[in-house]
Image (cartoon, rainbow, N blue to C red):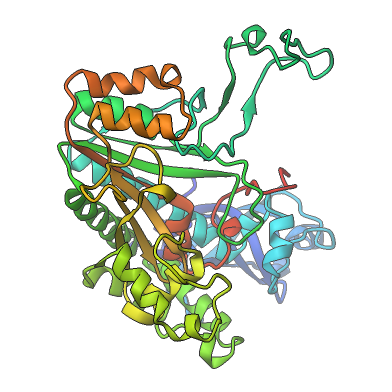
Length: 477
């Protein structure tokens, strides 16, 4: 008999039928009641075993983590908290699990312990819910852009360009580490490498994406990106996924509209599709908040926060206005910030971003028109000559979730900016071509997918919203 997903069994309207279910044992109590889960839903189905007619040997093998197949009648449950259960007629052990050695016991585990067992942590309620939410969010991303006629572009993972100009990139080479070929000056001779030049893992698909937007009108990328940044924080990963739309003829205001609409769409879609998982994560976060001092607790539950973002227009504030607010703020005056704001031109830190969102405006904030010298070379220079048409979206609990800009479409201005930063024209000749041949106003943004998942799930550490986190000194699994 073909097995039925537990999610479908629990929503069935057809009882008193013979069904087959397969999954992993969460608990087995009184030698009679199995809580079975197959990953299709956060909810288990109770399977009732006739222990008097089941061999002792089989009963001993029904342990937490074991994979089993049960066949029996789907009936209305007499127990509280569940609609249906399976009256087991036959039971087969598909894969044993040593109860004493299986790490995912039915008890509360620390997140640190679960990270050390990332290959098994998805068998817990919390991580099953997080990964289903991540999957639905990912689909919502594609759904949004496809419905709006965007073209999905796969930009290269191995690249010779540094889109951010930060230089924190992982090198890709096929050269031997012993007897590495050298030039006469003693430098590594990349002409003898696989690609004949120095290459890295991409930090962004933006530059390549721009070239496609200037032919296809509106495109998006959604793929892995890499930063060799030694940041051991709860907000940074060395490998993460990035969503990057790029739109020809869009200015900064259009860009802000697109980003806000996009975020609200994917959150709404996920709320509609993942109600059980989000209810569980909402309860989990509420319990976690109880252990915090009152002053540190969130004013809203997870579900309230998500619905608030859907019903609230994001506050748009210039960088200059934000600096004035921060300079006059109580934590700045009392020197509570780790980075004190004294003057215009400061690069805002996470503590400043979160103050603006969580304490001052109490809603998502879009900051725009940043100082040119703290932003990337490709951002359009404003008429004042000192700010660029950049924008960042700041979210509660997260800080920056989106970074974007109107791109510098003027060839001469872009070349001057590259010269000032020491970026060789011959390195990005192909990028400059888009400004030589049919240049036009265009804009785009990048959204770190894991930060979005972090916000939607209510988790506090980015390592808990990606299947196998890559961080400094950690590439396990």
